[in-house]
Length: 70
Figure 1 (cartoon, helix red, strand yellow):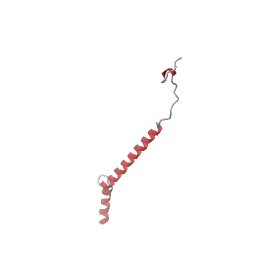
Figure 2 (cartoon, helix red, strand yellow):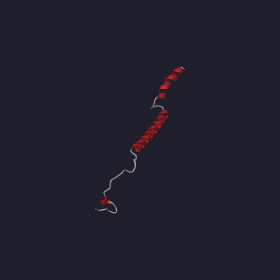
Figure 3 (tube, rainbow, N blue to C red):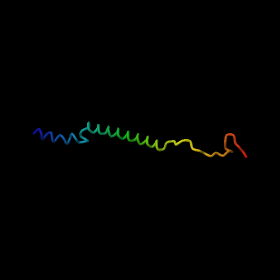
Figure 4 (tube, rainbow, N blue to C red):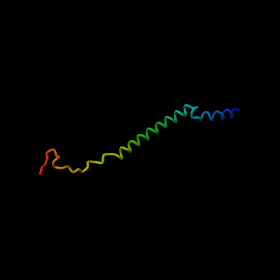
């Protein structure tokens, strides 16, 4: 009789909606995983679109601070 009661209790203990302890632990780790994945994705996006350096730009002489005219 004891074994029958233990077997009948096991499915309820494993049920996500019934056992708030197991479900809260699962939801906590799911939230941590999502935050870490978001942070890694954001860092990767910033890394791939980073500033590559000062480009070489041709500036006409007549548009400088001290213009040079012909």
